[in-house]
Length: 441
Image (cartoon, rainbow, N blue to C red; front, side, top):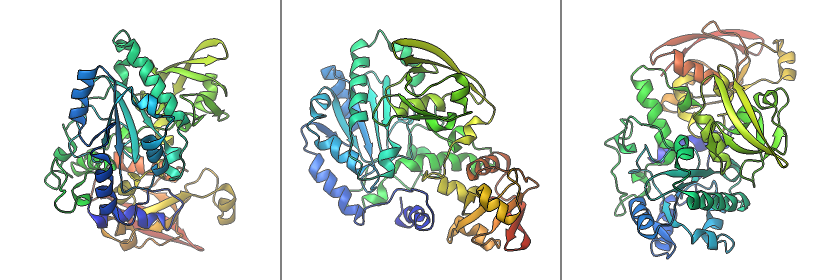
């Protein structure tokens, strides 16, 4: 990604409480240092996933592919632990291990995971069957978090699935990637012509790299530029368990730590201490697997689950209401920043608390999104150029006054508007009500 574009999320981070991934100061040096250290490593195949599949086929070992954005500080502690931890070494040696540092030439039908994470792992059979995924938002938010307990359990689970393969192949069907409109990232219009399959090691290597989050950005732009509604699974990708009211233990495979009262999970009978064995018919070996099962879940309807409660296994059903996906908290995702440019002109909006609403005379069921930050450049300056100001409170947009979150608003606008539309907005600015026009892009 070009340096100026990459800095946009960092500019937001300075003004908000969102957790966009920070980058090392010398991004170019970090990538070259990583190559120098890794390309001759006896355990790791460096930046060549095709070679990894060939070696997996030759040895009969399962394939482990780590996708790591080297310049990003997020997950730095986990990344270091995976590379150096003596505790993980015996497990890693049972895999063919590949380290990918860019997404230019990955097969999109095969590599489907949470593109907003700077460290992810995919477990494969040599025939291309995906066993499972690993990704950690707790490590993403805390670069120095080094615990590998959850990662270790996922490695063990992947090895167990491999041992049972291919008898269990049918049970893995829904874990596989879904068809994609493009074969590789560099074929998506937003990226096509700007990037090549291989990195430019003779020039600016970082500028020649497709970052994973750019895949999601490019997909959304593909739909938006055609004036088509952006699919909800691209607006709310890989929903976290909290979306249905579940907090999972970070160091377990899929063990429930907390169930939110009144949530979808609570109504289904999920309890703290339950261990999810299956969700949507899928075997689970990580929180990322749980998120993938939610990603494949229907927009509304029944989502079957099997949990272990003590020595008993129970069948439960999560009843997903229409619009459940929009309850995902996308505020911390780097992919949300480009969506803000499309839908809110570069504003970062925060729902006012009930206490703040009372001070401003707003009802608890009324729209009340406070402008915490205004973008200054390009598409992200659209709201500023339209007259919006920091600390404005949005109370009406396109005739809608019901209370919703920023994420819900973004989703609604990306599905119901087209670039070029201008929506009537009403904001509170001190004691004044100000009418403005918000441009859609």
